[in-house]
Image 1 (cartoon, rainbow, N blue to C red):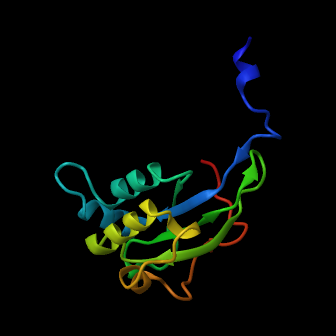
Image 2 (spheres, rainbow, N blue to C red):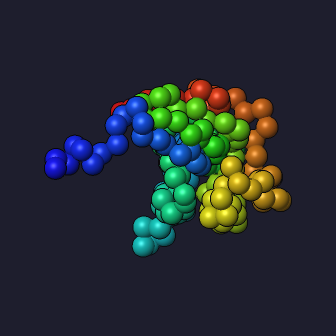
Image 3 (cartoon, helix red, strand yellow):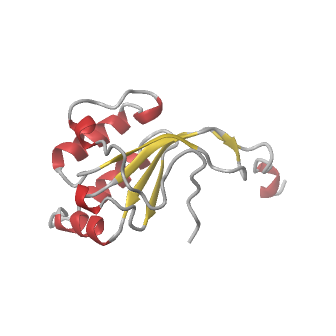
Amino acid sequence: MSSHATRPERDTAIDPGGMIVVACLGHRCAGLHIVRTDQNGLGPLSELKSAVRTSVAGVLITTGCMGPCSQGAVVGVGHRVARRIGERLVAKDMMLLGGIEQAPRLEALTTWFADGGPARTPLPAPLLTEALLRNPNLSPPPGPGFRPTAR
């Protein structure tokens, strides 16, 4: 039996959906991640990676500048809709959070991810509701139909 026979067919394989996190790595956000990194190499970005990696079907995407540089390190968080492999990725209920380099906000965010994230539990208050950026000027705006480009 070949290994090909054990792989699901492209048209029947299912991505169950799950959390999607888009981390800005523009100059300012990347700088804030570096400044907050300790001597062991642990910082906001490594904590985000770990939290997403241990979540159920979570995906972390890094991108260039998302625009609201004055708001500190920025991440977009939403829920990826279940789909067949090869179909367009659709993210729902995307929200942008700022100041994620701040330890209390980062801890609240990673705890929220461990509790199920945006698809299963509401945004925890007050730390993350304070971090929520209202009417951000994004470039490009994440939202329904947002598709990251492969590099």
